[in-house]
Length: 439
Ligand code: URA
Image (cartoon, rainbow, N blue to C red; front, side):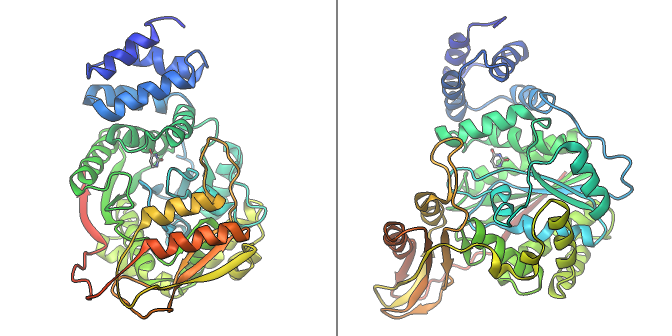
């Protein structure tokens, strides 16, 4: 490697000193060329996790990440190009609902998503629960699907922000995800390479978020909105509650089925509401609605009438999947072992831990403990209760979907511990959408 000695750069960051652009470049591009091994990058990322990055460092890293690959030019597509990205939550399957819905309402949605990260599942894994669905398209194929149906949903290609792709997998395996600069650079590098006019960010806050504290979530939201706006992409962030899982399903295939039912007009209220709010913001940024509220109303009506389902079926077909699963989500492959978890006490549901359920899915084989681990898309949890519900001893709290009896036993323990039953009805009712930040 030309340039600085890697250990000196790691030391410098560990002491909290600022690295200049050339140093960051030699370290990160050296990593991309396999001259810096994973263990040195992991140590550097851990130093960033504790010491942060200055604004100048963050902007340099973002540039390096964006320009490590191609930047799409979708100028020939005559519709506003608007995407959304979430910082990651448990049960968060809004992308599968909103991408076809936004396309149905006139936007072009070039969505590039990630796989599961830490305790959160990823859109790419969820899409792969539909048999045959190809999330790895060439850029030519991606463009062609977009032109034909107004939405394409893929994983990160090797051409787009390859540096993020490598770092993302390493961060997942080294517990270095929760960092404002690392999350900001990761998300914004992918999104700013997509050739967008507008971007809506769903920044999660609360127990199941990577950054649970409200202050940190606001910092993350503000950082990303500023980075997007500075680079000419109209950007809005909604800071939304992740104190409990979104919807009822947690686990890839189960979430896909729930999202498809929601798209057909039969989804849980929180999932439908958040999806419509995000589409409302997208329509506003794409100049297809005079206000986000107007956009929300249009999205809500379209969702209630199931208008997005045909577009989803078309998308699935064009990406090689079996569209019959869109109309009949019950056909999505199910786990071998399914059983209800029963409440051990009477009272009210005072909490449902998203993190316990998210890591529970990983334990059941539905997430990765190491980079590249295969995942079982059929396992997970299907919640039967919501916060505040009254339960008696023996009432079902939800179902566990596991691949074998040992997994089932583990899953039942996880679900019983994740759902906290308290003697009095809980008083706190926090709204799903906490803050809205604009550029
Ligand atoms: N989503 C991403 O794309 N990157 C992160 O770092 C976290 C969530």
